[in-house]
Length: 325
Ligand code: CP
Image (cartoon, rainbow, N blue to C red; front, side, top):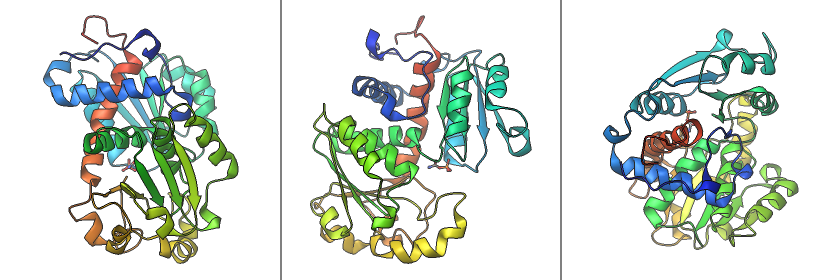
């Protein structure tokens, strides 16, 4: 294959992937470049990059996209995946996250963890001797944001100056990781939510700092129309995150004005697209006419989970020796 080599400062071998905010802009750009190259080259030329390597997936929560795309990614690169959930994993319950991490580091080459809380994941990673990937935690969903950057670059060429609006629960993990990626790459991130679902001032300050070197900007609005004006990308997610089902009725009432409908696109740029990480609820956070319409990129996003994660595994697990990486 003809992938562009990672420059020395972009070498990510052995790193954890828990929070995009811990990465440099050049590192994120390198990952996206690698994902584009692996996608355009197809699977055959990369089919031995992870030969003999094993990826463990430890999931406390349900998943379709994250689980299957990682399993397909590792097998397409010549490695194998092991999946554990429910009573088989129980990191932090049956044993400490540190003990589980030390044990698994002797069996496998990398671990993807999907947790309810973020803190056990941090503890697990701190004790692990192999790369640990956040497959979604209470705070972040960096794998989703990485795939979303790939999708936006494919459509718009670059995120520089791109106006991305997130409507709904703007405090959630998907919104936070998306915003990190957008501001790191020079885009303009706008949240539209009621005050109750607005990111904290600390989060907004961190995002502003993260975008300082690239010209990325962040603003939070309560008026969805003001946020939507001139937008290139309109993004939403479910109104109630996994584990917060008891809040669903309250959230549905509060977030109804932030639902994405065909009317939302009367305020955006004419070429604006719709994005959603899925799973989606038609008639709640998004109208069926939008998610199933011509503006929707949701299945490109879902496909790009696979390409992004192939790049992530190659970059974190291998040194590229014996390949053109
Ligand atoms: N978007 C996403 O993470 O999907 P899953 O919950 O199905 O993995």
